[in-house]
Image (cartoon, rainbow, N blue to C red; front, side):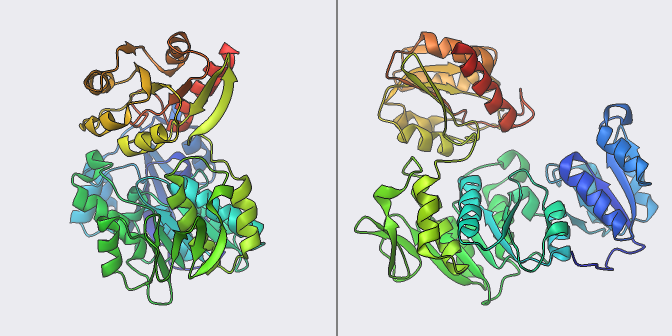
Length: 450
């Protein structure tokens, strides 16, 4: 960890806790800042805030009082989930107070270079693949970011011998200033998080921040099949490394004659890849490009791709019960992710879907519901998903209160040989704190059936 003096004696407000806020507060305190923490949850229900209080950090809980901004703060570190429309953030920006996320702190203190991964879908799988490939190649990687480990915590332990592989959301990327990954990946861009960003243009601009500080000495790995991604690439100063599942490229990562190739070199046969689903080929190509740019040998890449079957909550095989195979795809928080999951199976499917209503419809699912024999809905979007299911000609449609009740209902509507798939096409926040909680409840309900 670099012992920077940037924040010594500076008055800093950390807005919102959760894991990232707690870690950022403690780090800034160590770096000599005068830290104030403000979290909406009352102190009596807030063990994280109580712990910071014990460290000697000033804590204000229960509300976000706008008058706090009159206390002369020089910087705000905000929880990524707090939108820029929040009155506190709006007030800070009007006063000229810089606003960052803790990813920026992580970069500033890290002795290790970063490989940053963003996009609408495939971030977690790609991040995990890159990490596993570097690990297999003995490159001493660390994993961080939106995947569950706080970046500024990981960066405190990193040395120059490590590489931090970090999954980055658009929310996190809106709060960077100097962050500059050695290698950046943009997997794809589709309509998502418009309730937060307002427009697709703002969402794209947030994703583009991953490369805003890159120079020709750094690499940007991009999906050439996506115009929105290529628009970012054309504006980037980085060395562009393309990947494509459809075209043979002059350089970059691509498929040719059944082989994964990079810069004209055959890396391994596609048929040997263990990871299911055609959509995962994009993730494999981008991860392979990052690994090759990091000096990982083909044998190490092959070892990972022959054995890696996916991450938890992302098309995760759970169990077989009475001939039915259950899959947990709780991380499918938008329609495209669910489309990819549906396309991965040829068997009849009972689909479990629904969740937070962000104002969008689900008509793009209709062409991909051909193998779906029944739909079980739940959450705020139940009615919207039922409408598209009816339009797709599905006769058996049931609404239940939650995921736990959906599992036995799906079992009743299925037969041996069917797939029962949780792929909600929606965020979880109407009923569950995270998609991980939703997926774990699904897994538990499946095992209860057994």
